[in-house]
Length: 319
Image (cartoon, rainbow, N blue to C red; front, top):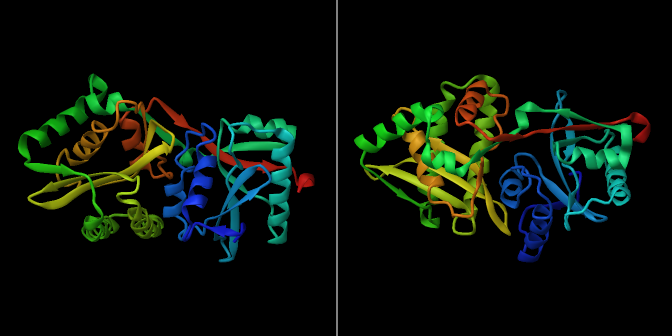
Protein backbone atom coordinates (compact mmCIF):
# COMPACT_ATOMS: atom_id res chain seq x y z
CA UNK A 1 0.00 0.00 0.00
CA UNK A 2 1.26 3.45 -0.87
CA UNK A 3 -1.56 5.32 0.93
CA UNK A 4 -3.18 4.37 4.22
CA UNK A 5 -6.86 3.86 3.29
CA UNK A 6 -8.45 1.16 1.17
CA UNK A 7 -11.81 1.38 -0.59
CA UNK A 8 -13.17 -1.46 1.59
CA UNK A 9 -16.05 -1.02 4.02
CA UNK A 10 -16.30 2.74 3.72
CA UNK A 11 -19.16 4.47 5.49
CA UNK A 12 -21.39 7.10 3.90
CA UNK A 13 -19.34 10.00 5.24
CA UNK A 14 -16.17 8.61 3.65
CA UNK A 15 -17.92 7.96 0.34
CA UNK A 16 -19.35 11.49 0.36
CA UNK A 17 -15.85 12.83 1.09
CA UNK A 18 -14.34 10.97 -1.86
CA UNK A 19 -17.14 12.04 -4.17
CA UNK A 20 -16.59 15.67 -3.20
CA UNK A 21 -13.10 15.39 -4.70
CA UNK A 22 -14.21 13.40 -7.76
CA UNK A 23 -16.86 16.08 -8.38
CA UNK A 24 -14.52 18.99 -7.71
CA UNK A 25 -12.98 19.44 -11.16
CA UNK A 26 -13.86 18.73 -14.80
CA UNK A 27 -11.39 15.90 -15.36
CA UNK A 28 -13.67 14.26 -17.97
CA UNK A 29 -11.88 11.02 -17.13
CA UNK A 30 -13.37 7.60 -16.47
CA UNK A 31 -10.64 7.04 -13.87
CA UNK A 32 -11.95 9.59 -11.37
CA UNK A 33 -15.21 8.22 -9.97
CA UNK A 34 -15.97 6.28 -6.82
CA UNK A 35 -17.37 3.20 -8.57
CA UNK A 36 -14.43 3.05 -11.01
CA UNK A 37 -11.95 2.92 -8.15
CA UNK A 38 -14.04 0.59 -6.01
CA UNK A 39 -14.51 -2.02 -8.73
CA UNK A 40 -10.75 -2.25 -9.42
CA UNK A 41 -9.67 -1.82 -5.80
CA UNK A 42 -8.50 -5.42 -5.34
CA UNK A 43 -7.07 -6.18 -8.77
CA UNK A 44 -5.02 -2.94 -8.70
CA UNK A 45 -4.58 -2.64 -4.91
CA UNK A 46 -6.05 0.87 -4.90
CA UNK A 47 -5.60 3.06 -1.82
CA UNK A 48 -6.31 6.69 -0.95
CA UNK A 49 -5.38 9.43 1.46
CA UNK A 50 -6.15 13.12 1.83
CA UNK A 51 -2.81 14.94 1.99
CA UNK A 52 -3.00 18.67 2.51
CA UNK A 53 -5.78 20.07 0.33
CA UNK A 54 -5.86 17.16 -2.12
CA UNK A 55 -7.06 13.58 -2.45
CA UNK A 56 -4.32 11.19 -3.52
CA UNK A 57 -5.12 7.78 -5.02
CA UNK A 58 -2.50 5.10 -5.55
CA UNK A 59 -2.29 1.66 -7.09
CA UNK A 60 0.14 -1.22 -6.88
CA UNK A 61 1.06 -3.77 -9.53
CA UNK A 62 4.00 -6.07 -10.19
CA UNK A 63 7.19 -5.10 -11.98
CA UNK A 64 9.07 -7.40 -14.36
CA UNK A 65 10.90 -9.01 -11.43
CA UNK A 66 7.63 -9.75 -9.62
CA UNK A 67 8.13 -7.07 -6.99
CA UNK A 68 5.71 -4.27 -6.11
CA UNK A 69 5.46 -1.23 -8.38
CA UNK A 70 3.53 1.81 -7.17
CA UNK A 71 1.83 4.58 -9.09
CA UNK A 72 -0.63 7.37 -8.25
CA UNK A 73 -3.12 9.62 -10.00
CA UNK A 74 -2.88 13.39 -10.11
CA UNK A 75 -3.94 14.82 -6.71
CA UNK A 76 -7.64 15.71 -6.87
CA UNK A 77 -9.04 19.06 -5.77
CA UNK A 78 -12.20 19.44 -3.72
CA UNK A 79 -13.12 23.03 -4.58
CA UNK A 80 -12.22 23.18 -8.29
CA UNK A 81 -9.08 25.21 -7.60
CA UNK A 82 -5.46 24.14 -7.84
CA UNK A 83 -3.08 26.26 -5.79
CA UNK A 84 0.43 25.67 -7.22
CA UNK A 85 2.22 26.04 -3.88
CA UNK A 86 -0.18 23.76 -1.98
CA UNK A 87 -0.24 21.25 -4.83
CA UNK A 88 3.54 21.10 -4.74
CA UNK A 89 3.46 20.48 -0.98
CA UNK A 90 1.14 17.51 -1.50
CA UNK A 91 3.20 16.08 -4.35
CA UNK A 92 6.42 16.40 -2.36
CA UNK A 93 4.80 14.52 0.53
CA UNK A 94 3.82 11.78 -1.93
CA UNK A 95 7.33 11.65 -3.36
CA UNK A 96 8.65 11.06 0.14
CA UNK A 97 6.24 8.14 0.51
CA UNK A 98 7.45 6.65 -2.77
CA UNK A 99 11.06 7.15 -1.64
CA UNK A 100 10.30 5.14 1.51
CA UNK A 101 9.24 2.32 -0.83
CA UNK A 102 12.54 2.68 -2.69
CA UNK A 103 10.90 3.96 -5.86
CA UNK A 104 10.69 7.24 -7.77
CA UNK A 105 7.22 8.74 -7.87
CA UNK A 106 5.02 7.56 -10.72
CA UNK A 107 1.96 9.64 -11.65
CA UNK A 108 -0.25 8.07 -14.31
CA UNK A 109 -3.66 8.51 -15.96
CA UNK A 110 -3.12 12.29 -15.79
CA UNK A 111 -5.59 14.15 -18.04
CA UNK A 112 -3.85 16.56 -20.40
CA UNK A 113 -6.03 19.36 -19.00
CA UNK A 114 -4.17 19.06 -15.68
CA UNK A 115 -0.68 19.15 -17.20
CA UNK A 116 -0.57 23.00 -17.31
CA UNK A 117 -1.43 23.07 -13.60
CA UNK A 118 1.50 20.78 -12.82
CA UNK A 119 3.70 22.93 -15.05
CA UNK A 120 2.68 25.99 -13.06
CA UNK A 121 3.81 24.25 -9.87
CA UNK A 122 7.02 22.70 -11.21
CA UNK A 123 7.92 24.61 -14.37
CA UNK A 124 10.12 22.72 -16.81
CA UNK A 125 10.89 20.07 -14.20
CA UNK A 126 7.70 18.21 -15.11
CA UNK A 127 6.79 16.52 -18.39
CA UNK A 128 3.66 14.70 -19.54
CA UNK A 129 4.28 11.70 -21.77
CA UNK A 130 1.11 10.88 -23.69
CA UNK A 131 -0.34 7.38 -23.25
CA UNK A 132 -2.66 6.89 -26.23
CA UNK A 133 -3.81 3.51 -24.92
CA UNK A 134 -5.37 5.22 -21.88
CA UNK A 135 -7.30 7.94 -23.76
CA UNK A 136 -11.06 7.99 -23.09
CA UNK A 137 -13.46 8.12 -26.05
CA UNK A 138 -16.20 10.74 -25.70
CA UNK A 139 -19.37 10.61 -27.84
CA UNK A 140 -22.42 12.78 -28.23
CA UNK A 141 -25.42 10.98 -26.78
CA UNK A 142 -27.49 12.31 -29.69
CA UNK A 143 -25.19 10.57 -32.20
CA UNK A 144 -25.48 7.22 -30.41
CA UNK A 145 -29.26 7.52 -30.15
CA UNK A 146 -29.98 8.54 -33.74
CA UNK A 147 -27.11 6.91 -35.69
CA UNK A 148 -27.83 9.44 -38.43
CA UNK A 149 -25.88 9.99 -41.64
CA UNK A 150 -23.52 8.00 -43.80
CA UNK A 151 -20.90 7.66 -41.07
CA UNK A 152 -23.31 5.50 -39.04
CA UNK A 153 -24.94 3.74 -42.02
CA UNK A 154 -23.51 0.30 -41.31
CA UNK A 155 -24.33 0.41 -37.61
CA UNK A 156 -27.87 1.58 -38.33
CA UNK A 157 -28.28 -1.36 -40.73
CA UNK A 158 -27.12 -3.84 -38.08
CA UNK A 159 -29.44 -2.29 -35.50
CA UNK A 160 -32.43 -2.32 -37.85
CA UNK A 161 -31.76 -5.96 -38.75
CA UNK A 162 -31.82 -6.87 -35.07
CA UNK A 163 -34.98 -4.88 -34.37
CA UNK A 164 -36.83 -6.40 -37.36
CA UNK A 165 -35.82 -9.99 -36.72
CA UNK A 166 -35.49 -10.41 -32.96
CA UNK A 167 -38.03 -10.58 -30.18
CA UNK A 168 -36.31 -9.24 -27.09
CA UNK A 169 -36.93 -7.48 -23.81
CA UNK A 170 -34.94 -4.66 -22.25
CA UNK A 171 -34.76 -4.05 -18.51
CA UNK A 172 -32.62 -2.52 -15.80
CA UNK A 173 -30.70 -4.74 -13.43
CA UNK A 174 -31.99 -5.50 -9.94
CA UNK A 175 -30.07 -6.97 -6.98
CA UNK A 176 -31.91 -10.26 -7.45
CA UNK A 177 -30.41 -10.59 -10.95
CA UNK A 178 -26.76 -10.35 -9.84
CA UNK A 179 -26.04 -14.13 -9.76
CA UNK A 180 -27.61 -14.52 -13.22
CA UNK A 181 -25.64 -11.55 -14.56
CA UNK A 182 -22.36 -12.96 -13.23
CA UNK A 183 -23.13 -16.35 -14.79
CA UNK A 184 -23.58 -14.54 -18.10
CA UNK A 185 -20.35 -12.51 -17.67
CA UNK A 186 -18.28 -15.57 -16.74
CA UNK A 187 -19.70 -17.56 -19.63
CA UNK A 188 -19.16 -14.68 -22.05
CA UNK A 189 -15.56 -14.14 -21.00
CA UNK A 190 -14.84 -17.88 -21.03
CA UNK A 191 -16.03 -17.96 -24.62
CA UNK A 192 -13.90 -14.89 -25.46
CA UNK A 193 -10.80 -16.42 -23.82
CA UNK A 194 -10.66 -18.99 -26.59
CA UNK A 195 -9.94 -16.27 -29.16
CA UNK A 196 -8.00 -13.85 -26.95
CA UNK A 197 -4.21 -13.45 -27.25
CA UNK A 198 -2.38 -14.78 -24.19
CA UNK A 199 -1.20 -11.32 -23.13
CA UNK A 200 -4.84 -10.16 -22.74
CA UNK A 201 -6.24 -13.21 -20.95
CA UNK A 202 -5.16 -11.94 -17.53
CA UNK A 203 -7.07 -8.70 -18.20
CA UNK A 204 -10.27 -10.65 -18.87
CA UNK A 205 -9.80 -12.61 -15.66
CA UNK A 206 -9.23 -9.39 -13.69
CA UNK A 207 -12.29 -7.92 -15.38
CA UNK A 208 -14.46 -10.74 -14.03
CA UNK A 209 -13.53 -9.78 -10.48
CA UNK A 210 -13.96 -6.05 -11.15
CA UNK A 211 -17.45 -6.57 -12.61
CA UNK A 212 -18.51 -8.62 -9.61
CA UNK A 213 -17.39 -5.77 -7.33
CA UNK A 214 -19.18 -3.21 -9.52
CA UNK A 215 -22.45 -5.14 -9.28
CA UNK A 216 -22.63 -4.36 -5.57
CA UNK A 217 -23.84 -0.92 -6.74
CA UNK A 218 -26.90 -2.29 -8.52
CA UNK A 219 -29.79 -0.30 -7.10
CA UNK A 220 -27.32 2.17 -5.56
CA UNK A 221 -26.57 4.56 -8.41
CA UNK A 222 -25.22 2.13 -11.01
CA UNK A 223 -26.85 2.65 -14.41
CA UNK A 224 -27.69 -0.57 -16.21
CA UNK A 225 -29.34 -2.22 -19.18
CA UNK A 226 -30.04 -5.86 -20.00
CA UNK A 227 -31.34 -7.44 -23.19
CA UNK A 228 -32.98 -10.86 -22.99
CA UNK A 229 -33.81 -13.12 -25.91
CA UNK A 230 -36.13 -16.00 -25.13
CA UNK A 231 -35.81 -15.04 -21.48
CA UNK A 232 -32.03 -15.46 -21.46
CA UNK A 233 -29.56 -12.64 -20.82
CA UNK A 234 -27.74 -11.97 -24.08
CA UNK A 235 -26.31 -8.46 -23.54
CA UNK A 236 -25.57 -6.16 -20.60
CA UNK A 237 -24.23 -2.67 -20.05
CA UNK A 238 -23.33 -0.78 -16.88
CA UNK A 239 -22.23 2.77 -16.17
CA UNK A 240 -22.56 5.81 -13.95
CA UNK A 241 -22.72 9.58 -14.12
CA UNK A 242 -19.23 11.08 -14.25
CA UNK A 243 -20.19 13.33 -11.32
CA UNK A 244 -22.71 12.76 -8.57
CA UNK A 245 -23.85 16.39 -8.91
CA UNK A 246 -24.32 16.40 -12.70
CA UNK A 247 -25.94 14.25 -15.38
CA UNK A 248 -24.06 15.86 -18.27
CA UNK A 249 -21.72 12.91 -18.86
CA UNK A 250 -22.29 9.17 -18.44
CA UNK A 251 -19.39 6.72 -18.24
CA UNK A 252 -19.96 3.22 -19.62
CA UNK A 253 -17.78 0.84 -17.59
CA UNK A 254 -18.99 -2.46 -19.05
CA UNK A 255 -20.72 -3.51 -22.26
CA UNK A 256 -21.05 -7.18 -23.20
CA UNK A 257 -23.05 -8.86 -25.94
CA UNK A 258 -23.03 -12.08 -27.92
CA UNK A 259 -21.29 -11.00 -31.12
CA UNK A 260 -22.74 -14.01 -32.91
CA UNK A 261 -26.11 -12.24 -32.89
CA UNK A 262 -26.13 -9.61 -35.63
CA UNK A 263 -26.94 -6.14 -34.33
CA UNK A 264 -26.96 -7.10 -30.64
CA UNK A 265 -24.03 -4.87 -29.71
CA UNK A 266 -25.65 -1.95 -31.53
CA UNK A 267 -28.95 -2.71 -29.79
CA UNK A 268 -27.64 -2.77 -26.21
CA UNK A 269 -25.76 0.47 -26.86
CA UNK A 270 -28.76 2.17 -28.45
CA UNK A 271 -31.36 0.96 -25.95
CA UNK A 272 -29.19 2.15 -23.06
CA UNK A 273 -28.33 5.63 -24.34
CA UNK A 274 -31.82 6.50 -25.53
CA UNK A 275 -33.08 6.06 -21.95
CA UNK A 276 -30.51 8.42 -20.46
CA UNK A 277 -31.79 11.70 -19.01
CA UNK A 278 -32.40 14.66 -21.29
CA UNK A 279 -29.62 16.53 -19.45
CA UNK A 280 -27.03 13.98 -20.58
CA UNK A 281 -24.93 15.30 -23.46
CA UNK A 282 -21.85 13.08 -23.53
CA UNK A 283 -21.11 9.37 -23.21
CA UNK A 284 -17.62 8.32 -22.13
CA UNK A 285 -16.89 4.79 -23.33
CA UNK A 286 -13.47 4.60 -21.67
CA UNK A 287 -10.15 3.61 -23.22
CA UNK A 288 -9.07 0.89 -25.66
CA UNK A 289 -6.05 -0.31 -23.58
CA UNK A 290 -4.03 -0.64 -26.78
CA UNK A 291 -6.19 -3.45 -28.17
CA UNK A 292 -6.39 -2.76 -31.90
CA UNK A 293 -9.79 -4.37 -32.49
CA UNK A 294 -11.26 -2.44 -29.57
CA UNK A 295 -9.68 0.77 -30.87
CA UNK A 296 -11.23 0.35 -34.30
CA UNK A 297 -14.63 -0.38 -32.75
CA UNK A 298 -14.49 2.73 -30.57
CA UNK A 299 -13.35 4.89 -33.47
CA UNK A 300 -16.17 3.54 -35.65
CA UNK A 301 -18.71 5.20 -33.34
CA UNK A 302 -17.15 8.58 -34.22
CA UNK A 303 -16.05 10.13 -30.91
CA UNK A 304 -16.32 13.91 -30.77
CA UNK A 305 -13.08 14.05 -28.82
CA UNK A 306 -10.64 11.99 -26.80
CA UNK A 307 -9.61 12.69 -23.21
CA UNK A 308 -5.88 12.32 -23.61
CA UNK A 309 -4.04 11.02 -20.56
CA UNK A 310 -0.40 10.48 -19.83
CA UNK A 311 2.39 9.70 -17.39
CA UNK A 312 4.07 12.54 -15.51
CA UNK A 313 7.81 12.45 -15.04
CA UNK A 314 9.94 14.86 -13.01
CA UNK A 315 13.62 15.63 -13.01
CA UNK A 316 15.69 13.48 -10.69
CA UNK A 317 16.95 16.39 -8.60
CA UNK A 318 13.36 17.05 -7.52
CA UNK A 319 13.06 13.57 -6.02
